Length: 282
Image (cartoon, rainbow, N blue to C red):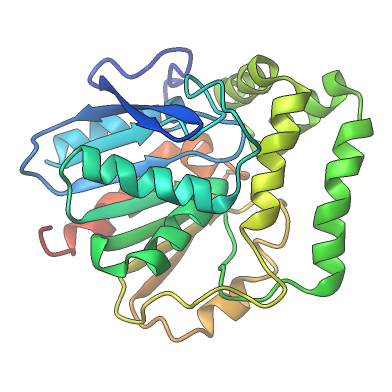
């Protein structure tokens, strides 16, 4: 399979801008405005180009595609304050408002999946379905030990030599050379200070008390790479499958790490399109 070009914005996407408190959010739109929309939010430190391998298959299947740079990422800089998950969720819903989209399929990777889940619990009527790549379930409480470790990671990353941290992060999140190079480029464009501010937002996305549960009637596609070793993602899968989510489909993407949609876009896209084909129109 040819490598995807992650150095550019997919040529089918048209840019737009949404002015939000503390940050201007850059987004990209493609496809018929009357079609079911798939809005895609990247993981921490990445940007909208993370989904370049998904854009064309979704457009060919007749969907409208929205990609964004979350605040502090990519072109959505500078941001005037350290963000929380609530900031990302408010931006997410504001983008739907700006594009006059009442309901959409939410697709998120890692931090983006946290954003999507929190957006569902805040405004469940606006989500047609949820697609998760490499994340945990926000309604499952984080253990006190894991919570302490997550907070301590901010200090650890602050002390970590930046060159080594960027190399380790890019190789641990992706197996494919194009995806690794992309992640390294994203990290180097941010720098350590902005990386730490974004990591603070990740800390606010989970809780020792757990957040509200996703609606049981929601159609969900839950995926992760078979080599994903980030956080508690694989460890939490049995608990996720025990939740009252009868419309949840679970798939492991082979030959993939944390950025499974980049490492194995062929398998991921096939799973995604099969799942979407079974949904009602927005």
